[in-house]
Length: 247
Image 1 (cartoon, rainbow, N blue to C red):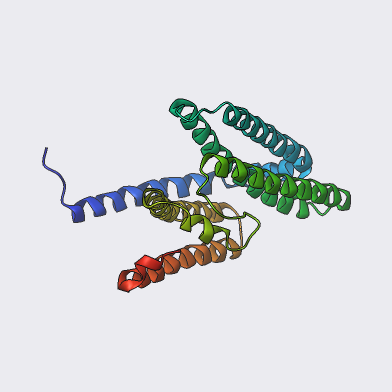
Image 2: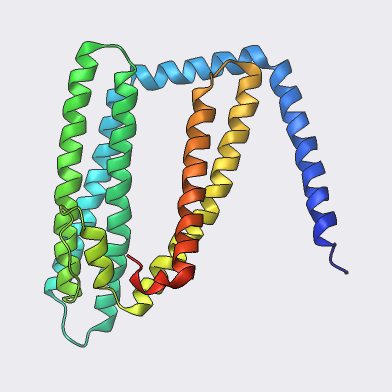
């Protein structure tokens, strides 16, 4: 079967997207009352049960982080010089551990923000305590996990509590590791463009049923433009003779 011309394919996709958007918009208009009530109920549920949600999410995350960390630590003690299988297992566990710590830290920030919107003094105080405990835990686990990584890879350098940690860590990576980092970064850039577009579309659809104000659009636009400018300026700078000094 002959492939469609890229221009025709683009317009076909645009027409289909517009049709689907129209159907969703029409559905939202006809079910406006139910959608608004569902969103209000969901918001109230999150705010009223925020502490419980924090305890469950952050507690389970902390438990999983501890299991992965101590499992990797025990395996590292049993690691022999020529045991490539065990080495790969530890490396894989550390590769899961670091993103999980980051997700736990980000979740703590978001849930604390929800706590602040609850307008309940006692919840704010307890929420603040949970937030601080989670921050201390995730920072501690980051330091400990990096120590394991440095034991596994003695050439690695950098202190996670140092503001220049990213630069030091990147300098200690070999060319293959840097290539993986750069490729993953570009992949993230591509996917985030798609995510911003989807979130903006969702905001547009929700705004049909209820007034969400201008701040969601301003925030999404600011983040999207900032990412685009940073990528474009950096790519232009690296293209004109500064690629060897990438940090």
